[in-house]
Structures are given as structure tokens and as C-alpha cells.
Image 1 (tube, rainbow over the protein chains, first blue to last red):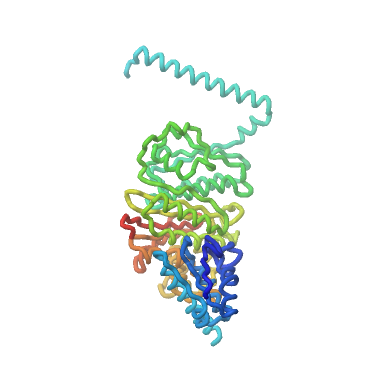
Image 2 (cartoon, one colour):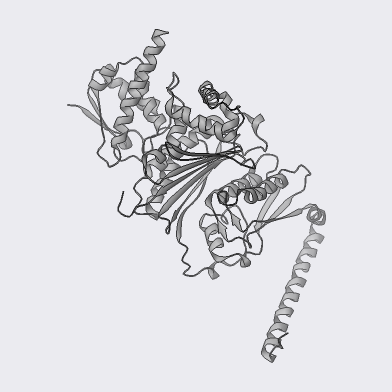
Length: 114
Length: 369
């Protein structure tokens, strides 16, 4: 059964920032603590976004786009990580996460070509 | 001239006598202090009094030039290197209207004048004859916490403004250093308390967090670009107001950094910014256009290899996603008002704002939209 991770309860009530220097609720720490282990162990996880005051772009980009930069394929990310949001107005974050993964992939393939 | 009645004459005489006694008492106290503390007379002589008369309309939207003149005068006096202590007497007696942007800028400057290295404890601020200030102006300043830490104020507060319909509700000023997302979260929560129909606090949180990110990453990094030394730490100030009549929330954030135009050349995406100027066919020296190009670059260009550089795009994203909302950025000598994708106003400011100010205006619809 997939493990559910509610960001505001299991990680930090104020997700924000990119690197540990930006505060405890940063995207790198979230990625390393929850997403990378799940992908390495090929374990299905559900990330629940509800309840947060919001998700700044730097947090989402670093958490999800950063996975691609660490070498995980977008297919694997989509296979093992499911992101859910039921709160009104939060559906835009699902779109943003998808964009970050796609852009990071394009960016890394462009880097490989050059 | 009207002849006074006997009762009025007695009253006036008693009033004059009280004033005279008070003055005698004041001198007695002063002289006894001077006797006990011989250097006091010299110190009093060395203290300079600076009278700052705030203009009738104190706002960067409606009266930028006059409002910033007062702020500039404050900074010049506070940072004067003559060794004098200064007492600033702030005179708001002519003020009819205060806007949140100007209020936040002057609050931040007072904060700096009291705490910046080199001038710490040299400057004091007091309210000059507050009984002559308009009640709604006094209440406005008080609600934002102006008299809590920044400005000394002696009028007995309980006597004031009973049942005054202010037409606004405030979230008091936050002064904070570095990344503090929890403060942004608290501010957006408090906005929901003052405006119960407010449905978009996530945009406020995200905008504030990205703005503080910009402050930490760029604003104070190069000290050579700063005219006046800042308080140690990457400080920023924020406040919010809900205006009932306009059904609008205004959130303002200000930092005293070098400003976006000056820090852009060190940005990893500066080449893209330069590309916009080449396309527009104008020289790279207009602050307003620099801010606009930075926003465009942040929004549309591919991320750099580490994914960074999207913050400015998120700061203005609310204007694209919510009808009737807008984002105004004042930085250096430039101003950009961002309403929609194709509705962007760029202008040049007569005076440098002394940092970067971002203002979000968000509608509050009672139908919950």
C-alpha cells in the first residue's frame, strides 16, 4: 500500500525555499527526505499538498525539478510519486509540478546534447 | 475681540497659572539634573532637533515626489557624520491621507536610523503635537504599530477616537531579517481574519516568500552599491491593509537593498535581459524597463541549469491569475505596474526609492470568487 505524506504534517507547516540555508521547510530537504528514498526503493508514495499556506515556485521546482537533475527519469517520477490536492485553488500546483519536471528534463537533455 | 465672561476669565487665568507652574517645574528638574550630571548641558547643546513636516498626501502612488523628499531628508540627517545626536520630530498635523507604501518606507527608514551600525542610539523619533493630527491618521499609524517601537508618543491614548469608523482593518508591520516563511504565513492568515471573504491567501504567501528570497539573494549582497548602510542582516518590512470601501487588500513589502536594476548585471540570466533591450532598441539605462525585462525573463525564459530565477515571475503571477488584481514594483528609479499580460505600465521615478518596494492589490469579493 502506498505511503501518504502530508507535507504540512510530516515535513513542515511552511514549505518554502530551495536550499537548507533558506530554512527548514526547503525543497532540497523535502526531496532528500521523502522523494529520493521512495524512488530508490521503488516504493509508491502519495504526496498530499493540502493544508499548506501555499507553495512557492522555488520549493516546488527544487523538490520535483531537482529529482530530474539528480538523474531520475520523469517516467519513474510519475510511476512512483502521486501528488494529490483537493483544497480549492490547489489544483494549479499539480500543473506547476508537471511543468517543473518537464522543463528540468528538457534542460538536462539540452545539457547532454551540448 | 469677544469679551470673556467672568467664569471664562477665571478659567483662562487658572490655565495660564498651571502652564507657568509646569514650566517652572520643568526648569527645576532640568537644572537639578544638570547639577548632578555636569555633562548634560553640553549634551543638550549637542543634540540637534530635526522637524519633519509630512505632506498632506503621504503616499507614493499619489504624491511620490513630496513623500520621498521627507524620507530623503530623514536619511540625510540620520546619517550625517557630524557626531550630533538627533531628535526627529515627526509632524503629521497636515496629513489628510496616508498610503501604505509611504508609511512602510518611512517606518523602515526610522528603524534603520535607530539601529544601523555607526548611528545606533544617535537618533530618536517623537511625534510632534499629535493632538493636532487628524484622528483617522493617528489611528492609521497606531494600528500599524508606528508608536510601539519606532516613535515616542505622549498623548494619552485612551482619550482618542472613540467609535471612529476607520473604513479599514490592518495587519501590523512586520520587520524581519532573512528568510522567514512562517512570518509570511502568519501575515496571510491574519489577512483572512481581517477580511473573512478573502479567498487567495496562498498568492500572498508565495509572493512574500519569493520577494524575501530576492532580498536575501540579491538586495544587500554588494555593499558598495548601497548609499546608506543597512541594519545588519537581510532586513525587510511588510504590512497589509483591507480597505472596506474598495473591497481590496493591499500587501506591501520593502527592502533597503541596492534595487533590482543595479543588481541585475550580476544575475545569471542577465544576457536574456540584455536581449530584451536589444529588441526594444533602447540603451540599457532605464530602471523601469530593467525591472520589466527582469520580470519577462523570469517568467518566460528557460530556467538556468539549477532551476533558479523564477521568483520575480511568481511575484507578479497573481496579476495574471486573478481578475482586478495588480502588482506594483518600485525599485531604484523605476516603477512597473503589472495588471495583465498585455497591460504593463512602466515609468521612471523622479527620486530613488532606496531599495525595492512590492505592492500587491487583490480584490475581495463577497461571493467568494
